[in-house]
Length: 168
View 1: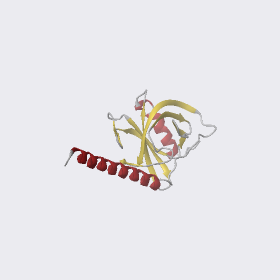
View 2: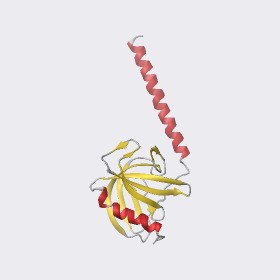
View 3: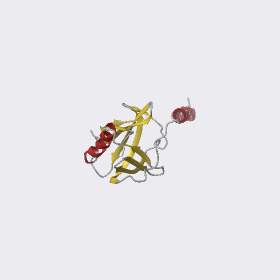
View 4: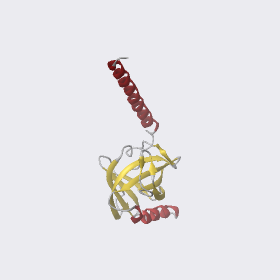
């Protein structure tokens, strides 16, 4: 086989792989089209803290390698995590602000691994929340200028407020 023929075969294989990735992503977007995150912050929510974050991914609950394409949490982005007395707002660059009310939050803890991201032990924050009545998701964020331990107690208190029926 000549050098040109080998190059053409490799280019064809690369094109087939890229097309497969493209069609698989489109299928995932269609599969998850019914799932949306709640947007807009309640009018009287009192801000208690703000932190710059990197939004990493949202996955099926306890399946950190199975991405969910929940609108508008489809792509990675920089943004800000805003803690309020009523829940958590995630304001990502180029997307509407997602607001997870305490009533939706199930748990907040630390993680090390999610889809295509591995960090130091406990370097990610995992927010477990109800997308719908039959879908629970894990959203992973990474603080850019602080340690997860600094905000985890506040996040966990928002989750426990929901468990105790406090929907402020």
